[in-house]
Amino acid sequence: MRRTLRALMAVGLLAAGSIVAVALGGTASADTLICEQYGSTVIQSRYVVQNNRWGTSAQQCINVTSTGFEITTQNGSNPTNGAPTAYPSIFLGCHYTNCSPGTNLPIQVSQISSANSSISYRYVSGAIYNASYDIWLDPSPRRDGVNQMEIMIWLNRQGPIQPIGSPVGTATIDGRSWEVWRGSNGSNNVISYLAPSAISSANLNLLAFINDTRNRGAITNSWYLTSIQAGFEPWQGGTGLAVTNFSAAVNGGGNPTTPPPTTPPPGGGSGCAVKYTPNSWNNGFTADVQITNTGSSTINGWTLAYSLPSGQQVTNSWNATVTQSGSSVTARNVGHNGTLTPGGTASFGYQGTLSGTYSSPSSFTLNGTTCTRS
Image (cartoon, rainbow, N blue to C red; front, side, top):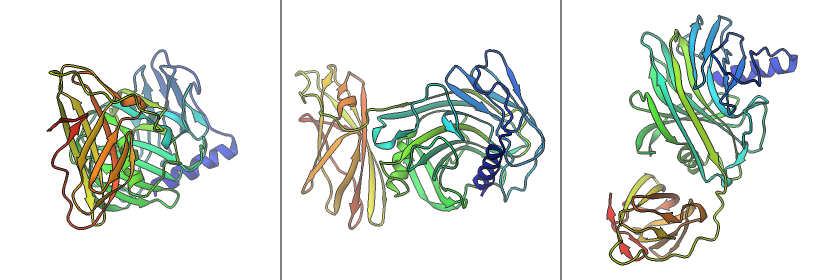
């Protein structure tokens, strides 16, 4: 619902050729005040900060710093059962033909080896708003208009507001539990991940959220990631809300490549730990697996072996080449994650079908060495 309004307003302005911006395409070297409805500027020669007041005619202003922005004026007020007033935000990628400098987005999901972001928020009391990421994806590498899939990560929610759609379950991603909502605003599909309590700063593995969305059948590996955006959606109030720091990076090279030779670590220096995080439903499951080298020697190339309980069958995987014969599973590193220094970690995941009651594997070996469970 709220995205439809924002999309229609932005499209109308583009058609009329009347977008007004402060320092559009420029670089903010000192604080920059933006009050124009869709005004934007560039910081760090890398990110775009936008006012994006799409849901109200009342004035909104943001003060853009070298590391983020603060809402200095927010006079809009919308009912909590409808759309927010705006989405002031900072982004990497492309938003309605406005692309951040030097971006490698859009990039096909199958080509992504990592997508990470960090953020620090400053919150205020007495306002109704969310603090959220928008991750936009589309079947085509488009740099304009409305994308077909929106992932929202709600790190904070204040007041009687809720994500689009309805709850469909929970997910454990990036070491946190999230309530998952799913719906459509009439213009694009939305999957939202709602934190149970406010998070003021975070380092997020955004690829894990993209993979979970794919595993729910909402996208495929052939789709494109077009932008990563983070900011606030205010309904009422919001002056003083700020993003004090933001960074994001998307790396390619995600297609499996020929892994380095798998060699056991030198004798006496071996050791490994495995963290296995599942998410199951009636007839399927996903698993996120993290391997840690607890030994004193570097591992150059790894093979993780274990057995899946009866009724589980791997269907697809990411960040590892996973094969299954009967109940035996072998996961081999891909090109970018084959080296594990002492204390280093590597992560991969996969999706499978499920028949019967779910249970997790009980033991793992890495290059023939038995691992502990972490």
